[in-house]
Image 1: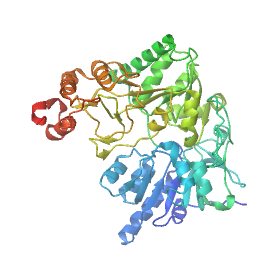
Image 2: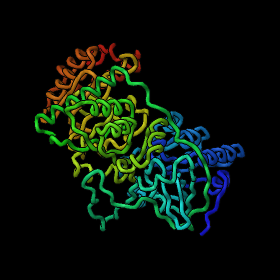
Image 3: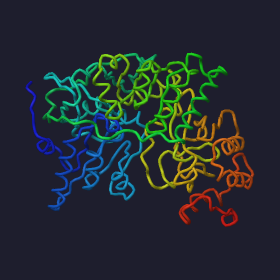
Image 4: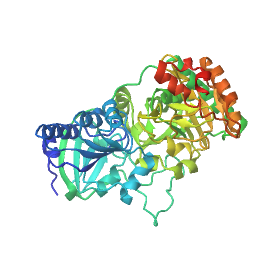
Length: 498
């Protein structure tokens, strides 16, 4: 079959109002760029004519601005799942201009196969190469690409020359069978290869190829500050003590970490600590710190779903592919985030909390309980299944006006039953084997900012008698005070405990 090359505008003409469209990628890595922008332009034109034009959007995780941003700004999204991090998308979700299903990332592909979310009409895939018999070589992110390519009626490919064809071999594409035929996923070490280096599709479904030459969206990480470095050092020191005590094997176990500056700092500090042996990574997002640690021999192998790295790190990888192809493997997210594999490998899972309460419950998603920030992402996949689950967070935000620790979380994503350790710039709260009151005293003593220690201690002491001593008159006083005065430190318990 001869592949057909088309323009981005011609590609957009295949998308209709009320369609559900799947996109490749995971974070901005591996996401298509020019076709989504053309769809947004078409939606804007249809709206100006008075015609409806909205689509459902299924992706791996967050995307670049060319998908979430441009489509949101022209009100072209009917629903969105499973995760996002774009400010315009966030505004649309919180204004109910688009509906949002916040999902565990490991579950989306199988839920699509089960038919829980309806039909996928068209998929748009970024590729480094494609053959006439339907072998698609993905770029720097996999996401849900294998599943949506199989389910969709039509496939549009953005053939991006920025990503070398020689990236072939860096991907491990594997889809598990659905029940009742599912077997174990045969990954026993992070470097095990179980699938193919390409996504195989029926070439008749490829309706067109759009040629591009564009780097991933997004830039470098922000410079590390004293707070993020202190958190990183506290995590590294804690893990050293776990090894010395025998609670972690001396050979260590694979590491999973979330995305962002704190996660990058944690990885860097672990790599610099001579008491932590060289380690493997089994995670969803491979970041800059992993690349530099590979160069120094401190990270032996990294399995993930995407290369979410700075432009400089991406240039380094592509300029030395023979070195990195032996050390990096990119998988679909239902494999990279799979709870079965996480439990088998015994991961140390390190993720970020938006807020936590003094009893160890964690909110990863909602500001003041109502406004969606980004989504749960992969944190739930790993927190409950890892050998050791750690949450990190700076103790305060907004110049100390917001405490990361509150009497009761305003929204709960991870319960006290899954959260084993919390770490801030002030220290470590090891919650394993502790009752609610013991957890509360441990968190207040070790993790809370000094400005809030007395307030939270007073709250604990006024709690209603019971196993978990909450005071329902005061449990959201921090959030109410923030809304009223803009500073949680202004809480006066007598005004609330009535």
